[in-house]
Image (cartoon, rainbow, N blue to C red; front, side, top):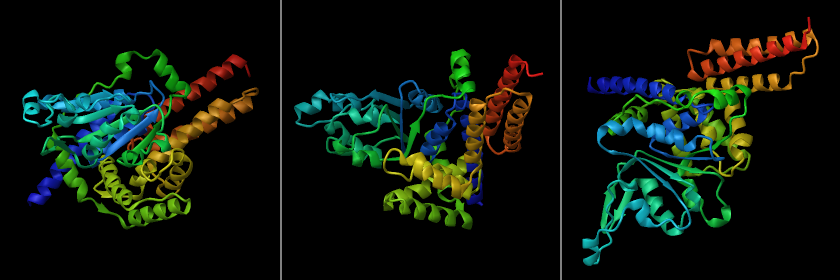
Length: 383
């Protein structure tokens, strides 16, 4: 009976995460990044976001950290790393009294070892001494302070960078600590750019009202650990791994195990009580080693095999953008054909509006594209 009650509580928490997803999803074209951030939190794994400055990487993580503000903890630690970063800047100043005793003990309150969420910006530019101390904390959640091993309250570590690390700098060990790795692209769609330029700051900035305690996160993780895999999902992930390795991408033992953990967290975020093939779409951000493989190789394999609603929605939206972008409307027949193609995509999206919050947002964008085509038709006076 207690197990049933615990499961029910954990699934009720899922509704909070669903609401949090919706509150964060006001950011322009950052649906996939929001999913990655929440899956990282639910799985207890670290994630890395690489993209141009101004693409919302830090805003997203700062917005997420607000869920913990009501619980009297250091909800977020942020630091902009550079080659001159000192240990004290991240882990706190040394205790003078302890130094007189010959001990190096950091005062960690308000610094990285006391934070629930960490955001390390430009992480690959930090000094080797700092990186070595970060490895254990990111991997085990442990900080060695003097002679004491301190278990940190860190729920998720996030890193951001404007560029991928140089393989010559021996950063492989650190890079591997980030299980979820995502390329963050600039906003490119006409509808997205229009929102970015003309919507108010309030409309583009998440207003996070959901509040979670660390215990809530641990409770959700307990439920996630027990999620059962559908037989089809097991076969699907095994085939994904097989095809990824056939492309010459080596997926190590640790990353394989992490992939299972991340897929479970994604299923929970999708509101499912078991892991289904469509919940494996998150693996496109997990099963790769070299920048460029994310979409070019792994993404295509995962899309083909998992065939998730999320990925289909993304594909339909990209298809609609391409149709509108390449439309060269000269005759009424051409205008009708373009409009019909966009309308067909709109109908597909509305059919899935109850399955994914992304479908509703995508449908709105396609509606805007249809309006643009109509204006173009009127402007060209094709009657």
